[in-house]
Image (cartoon, rainbow, N blue to C red; front, side):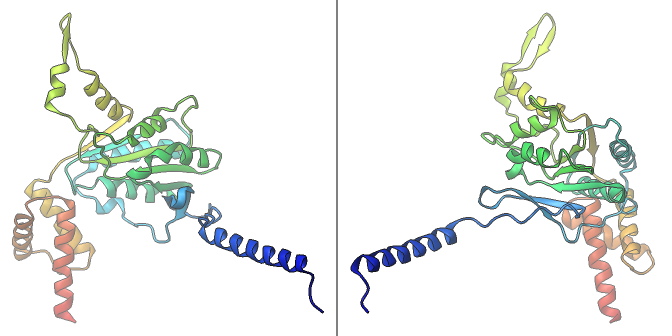
Length: 294
């Protein structure tokens, strides 16, 4: 029996609507996964404007004993983090200075020291700093304590992520969350670029120096970190100590004069003496040893 023309029309309309809805659904961004609060470390991810904390399956297991020639910085950061984990007052921390001297590794090592006591780590890239207020709000009511880790931080002119960082450090109309600290690393202490022309804005009033507004703005961001830790390049002896430690830790042969000469030649070729160069030398030397023994 033939269908009524009106019924055929409505069936075609329904089919077209279903097809259109299917196309719309396929073009919509996927729903972020349900938040997993069992992880110990996270990365902030924001695909399609939907932010969430992505668990890190294999966090870096760097230990405090692996960090050489930074004992003062190690003690200060340990003490600050211990206060935080115990629910006492503690400061946000800015670690600055020479590249490759252990700034990032120290943050991860200190976190590893307290991870079994409920300390969690959230790594936030510079491009996502504008989401810091949302991240802080997301974890504010959680029972754990959270370190927000911003690695290799610096800003260029026109980069407004620093304003969100300032808000997260000092709070806005809302007080800073008691279960969140920010640990940031940078190769420069003043996180915003400084220019020679800005010095011309400096004024002298009644014998006091008053920097220009642009300079004040750039200094103010760094000053919002309550604790500054500075890192410096290694002396030759400090560098060799780090090389010897890593060669031993990675299972190399006994340290001798030949190994010392190789380490110095390696540093000369890299144009730097620091913990990263020492670690890279040890990996190369121990790797070659094990290849010969295989």
